[in-house]
Length: 162
Image (cartoon, rainbow, N blue to C red; front, side, top):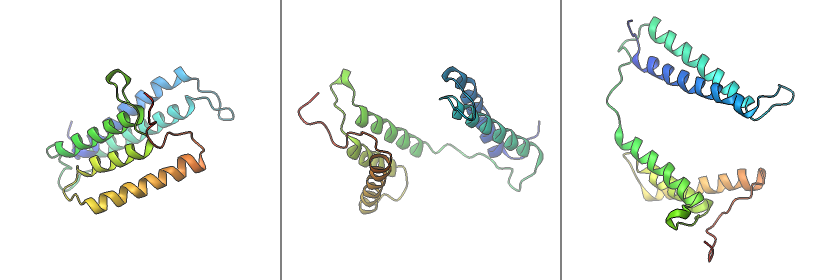
């Protein structure tokens, strides 16, 4: 097998694995019909779409030549670690960790922490820009989730309760 584009090949494989995973688990939630969609309908469609897209990328990587061969360079571990840490901190701040005595900190603090930690993944960290971004993301998510979708979200820590 002669790979003509490594990036497309491995991206396609990743898409196919994720797509098959979504499609495989979707029937557990009940698929329903197009007129009466069940909770597994969207994951099944998403899985099928990802699998087809991955197949197209793998085919392209095996058939069409590129100038540099789409070589995969070394892993950028710093961004991977910072983004993983940011997502973990977001989850911890939103839900808390009762077994460790950590109370939920609310939506606002979780988004600010997510933005600040994830911004450390880049090379040019500037506090002013990061805080403006955190403010915009917080206000935008408030408008979308609380105002438009009417979600009941704890915006701030519940003071005095554990």
